[in-house]
Image (tube, rainbow, N blue to C red):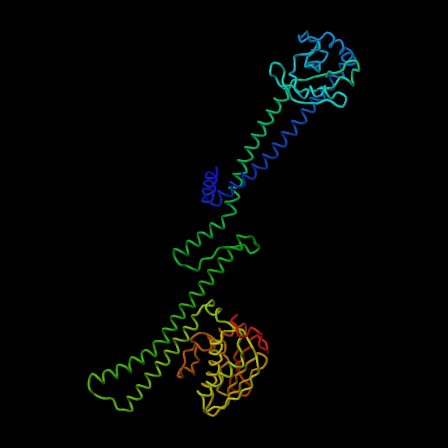
Length: 487
């Protein structure tokens, strides 16, 4: 039995959703209809039996006082032989049962009813029994409804006996059988109709899911992420939410692919220039060795310096690309409480080495944030590098950190207003800065790192000339107890 059930459940799970929904609806309706039908059948059965009991009591009432007065005569002239029915009780079985089991038939009885132990118990408890109603059979096996009453209360002169009257149940059983057949037919029609309605509703309800399936299959087959599923604006059911989620997912994937393709194209473009220059310099050095024509020492030194600079630029570009390609999960494993004050001071030391001719003033106060230490330091270094790169010789850079707000102000040429919206784009470089070293990824890394720490970064014109970079990162002025543990 268990194996059969398991096989059924397995096959049920392999059916299409619409078939399963139709079967579940049909099963639910079948259960409900069956419960109502059975309840209805038992209620009608009880009513019919009550009606039969009332008919029996009415027959006894119509038979007296002559019927009751003749009970002692029936007992005295006890006979088990059926006599001509005078229709005094209609089609009623009527007899007296003695304590020893002897049956005395009334002259008008239509037959003999088989006596049961329950009838004899009525005789034994005649002083307290009120009588019983039950289903029984007559001597020919026909179903009858029986009412047994003790005679001690009815006929003081007749003790240790009971009056048994019964009516045939042929009509009642016929009615119940007809009712059962009708209920069965109605239930069958209802279940079939419910199954058909469930299948229709499932098809209509799952039509958006079919569209979604077709869209997913289309994307898997063609990798076309521009496909969209139409959704009604005022619809907020589960299918509509699923469709909106799918549309959002494909939009995000399309944007991600576009950014990836743009990153690859931009990286290829940026790599082409240093690689071309590096190959040219290496070819000059190689040709000099192959031809035996030495390059003048000054020119050779310049070529080697150029090669070294191009290698450094390539290493920096590759490092920036690796930083941008890291996933959010890789970053989350290294996040911890970081002292922004210590990070800024470390970046300031590096900036002073790169711009020894500049004056860098700093006023930094304690501030602790949640971030990746190396990424945060790299972002601060990139900001200071930009300030060093664009500051005039002998210029001043002012750095201040107060309650989580870091400002870096230089006195360089500044950034044109039309270029400010693009400064954080990947590989974007101002036309005036294309001759300077750099990959165009520094500020993109800054923006990403600050956003991942829950902050924001902006660039703006500084009063009196130059540029001011502002970084805001949420945190606390004091280190929490778990500051040394990764978060």
